[in-house]
Length: 489
Ligand SMILES: Cc1cc2nc3c(=O)[nH]c(=O)nc-3n(C[C@H](O)[C@H](O)[C@H](O)COP(=O)(O)OP(=O)(O)OC[C@H]3O[C@@H](n4cnc5c(N)ncnc54)[C@H](O)[C@@H]3O)c2cc1C
Image (cartoon, rainbow, N blue to C red; front, side, top):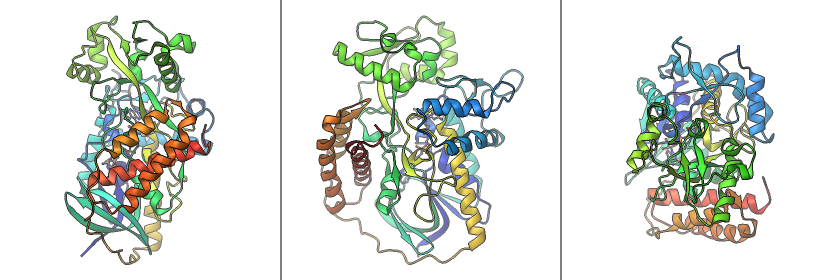
């Protein structure tokens, strides 16, 4: 017998976990995570969460202005107002449920500055804020008897039926179905569409692909943020982030000849916004014919570096680089997706009963470029809004019976040829990485479109590889389609 839930949440990052906590005990919730609960972009967040908490030195107008400037005024103003005005109480709620944000001696939350913010308003836990938040949220979620959790389970299909949805799940080799009156997609970003990304292995855009296949509106998927400083490991996939705060504390960006170059491209030098510095690095790379770049903070006191950046320090050490003595090899990377599944103020998509929140969604908050530390805030505000809206609807309309479940696949089919994901990543890297290459749009789109069609009609065996390759292909196709049509540029 198939199990039915009031709410199914796809994803266990900050958006999924925080949403789950909002439901009262009589709402039965299932939260699904395709890998272990702690593997997500949320767990990787370093810097912190932006919120106006110090009304003596900061106010909503300033945070709104900073967000609009970073977003090049392409933001949705009412979404930004909601983010900024509602966010502080969500951040305080995190503190109340046990997130150990760093504090001043006075006991006040410590607030730091990041590029693009005109005031100190980033609350943080050392340089591993995301992990501190995720660990606390998981603890709280596990204590709630109305929430069930399925780890290592891939949602591969989402069907709309009367009064709700049916989801197809793959756990190991077992294929099953669950029903839901409401679904929240909280599947995070799309970093793995690129060769170079700071994102975790789960960031393959699965939720965006599922929503797209169901006919939900997807918007501005080609608004992608490239971070200028990811560790340039020999192993191409794992590129951990060297936080902006390292440049904030005085690190300088050097080219292959050991020369500073950022001021040649912008008067703000290394502290210009992310997109500007990334752009400067790629132009300098073309000028020098080399992808070798470094961050150098060796002029600072070693003890200060270890205290201020314990996580980055130890990650660099694991790669054989002692940042107190050695220059850190860095290069730009795909980092964040501003676009996504289109949602309104209550996080509803264009499909009745389907919600989205976090990095997979598009609220319009970030405009053309995300302001640092606004994304965790967005995940909190909009996932709470989604849960509030679903709760209201459940109260009003009661628990109506779900339409019949569609026929479930047996998962059998042809073996997926190797290298599809690598091929798409290469196409994306060559076509649109920091500096767009319009002359390649049409050809790249045609190639990816062919792959999408083959994956959808090719009767392939249902495996995690197949699910992720299909998602990456669909997402790449939408991005290239937007670029080809001249949307966003
Ligand atoms: C290195 C790094 C540093 C960052 N630093 C900051 C920062 O300091 N401040 C800030 O505001 N933002 C930061 N960000 C961005 C921010 O962390 C993310 O935007 C945010 O955490 C996304 O949360 P999410 O809940 O939407 O998705 P995620 O946290 O990525 O969670 C996605 C979840 O979806 C699940 N999932 C995906 N597909 C499926 C499927 N098919 N079936 C089942 N489950 C699925 C995954 O298993 C996972 O549980 C950073 C990002 C990175 C990569």
